Length: 112
Image (cartoon, rainbow, N blue to C red; front, side, top):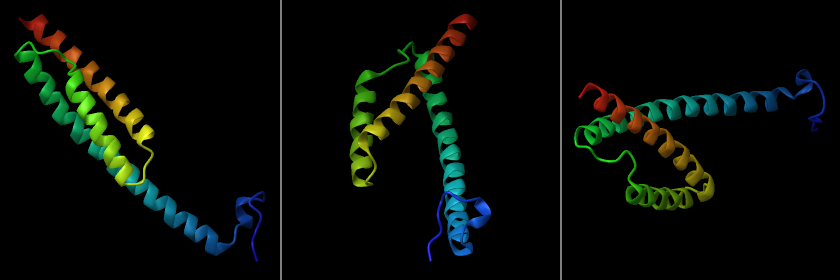
């Protein structure tokens, strides 16, 4: 017997509820891993920003960004993830990294 998904949460079959809970727990764990991985990535990009600022290099590197976007699109395709989504995500991350690099450069210049 199947249950309608229009009823109250209490009306859900216990087996379905257990499967939903199991899947949601996995999603929560993956979300936590993604946040931690992003934090590690930003630690590395902060170091890049300090290195660029110390050597008066521009905050953005369009050539590197293009290579990374192409690489991430290939990885997404191989993982059966929408490459356009992966590109949007990376573009968002890149914009944030550049913003950090600009701030680091400004702080470095202000101290000099």
